[in-house]
Length: 283
Image (cartoon, rainbow, N blue to C red; front, side):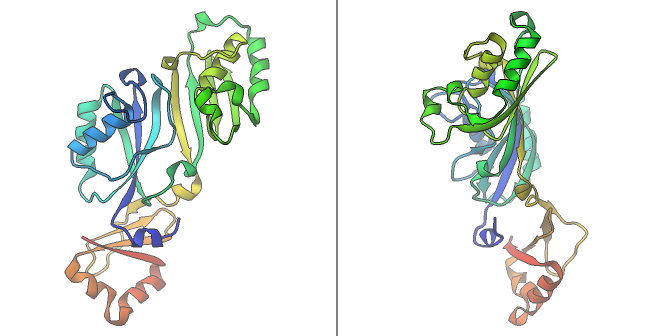
């Protein structure tokens, strides 16, 4: 991520942390004629005035009927209004199926999955259906935790992927399976769940699976953009900074831009000595 990338565009990246009930949807990805997680998110957000040009990227792609406590949806948009009101209206309308927990502003036009550190899934299979002993389950947990080719736990679609090696750690506490990994293949968690609890590779139902959390790499976390209310600069309407203080964004009216930059860029040079990298956005 280079700050030059935000100098040459009027867009920002937005990361929405969302809850959704997988049983309310046909699937996760957009699909014509079907009610999907991404499709409903796009439709309602667009209706409320928040739009973007390209597709929605995600922290974790979930199988049909799989729910999420905290998945991440990332888009790049030139939206400049009040997102809090849009989120409130979205949640009022969609609270039975999708709920936006929070939104974070960051760099636009990212290849978002590259900035995911790890994903955490929870599988809550009914205890009365579990036939294996705790000893057998714990033995299998040791067997399948680690870094290796997980091809036997995916489907035909997964086998077509170029990379089959994954890192995963699986634990079992109080009847709940927890999977933490850098990346998962299609149906991997559900097939692993079946293998752990039955001893056979079996695709367990999606309705018992939840994407609990998606963890981002520090590189991206440091580039979240926050309002900077304790800094005032003449001619500047609003100021924002990245969390790591590496970049300062100055929002100015068109007629004030020359004043902020100064003759022969004298003002902006002085500000850069004080603040470091500066991006100016017209409002």
